[in-house]
Length: 296
Image (cartoon, rainbow, N blue to C red; front, side, top):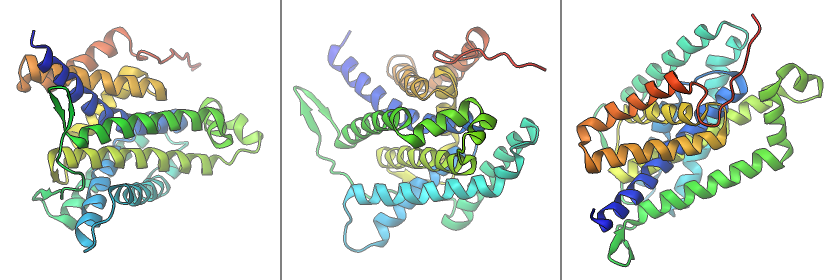
């Protein structure tokens, strides 16, 4: 085995897995709070990439990369809150199939809205991160990969600390476990749900920004396949579990990258979706998920 090639594939898998993990966290947070699979989350990711593209190309003076990221994440967070208020809020007590159909409808609506606003042709993402690689011995790692991996891991650690240590994070966990009891304890359910959508959408936007920089393109269907794979990552780790979403993201990134590197790129999607089938057959609750019994 070519050790140098294998190390490069590991780095590539960490880069891809970081993007999937960021988007998967958005899926799992929303599901954990209101038991909704937000299929429009991939489109929020896509709009995050468009926000970064607009900011990077509209302002004559080049803004620092972190400013572009923060503004794009803030706009995506606002978009996530508005999506929840407009499309999902009145369906909280409706049958789950109604909310699921609405989520699919929102996904298609946002795709077509992006195509109407920006056009169907892909936009070329400007170079907001230096192309000069960082050398680790004989291995050259592009700076965008280092940014993606390091920022993603750092944000995931901060999010974990936020959920476990802060009052808002504890309130989120309380709402996730029992909404009625949390309401009786004086927790603002609407505020917590909005906060969850804001954080999840911001992380999805960050994943979209890194994806568009890595592939130098932004287009209306950018979030479709990436969003589906992130959903698989969330299911793999145990949907509703933030740590599981991280593990699932890196696992799916590893499987996809190794398939492309050592088998064939044509088989990568088939194998990833095959993994989803196996998970649903043998461990439907995911790696870190828990089987929950519901009384009928």
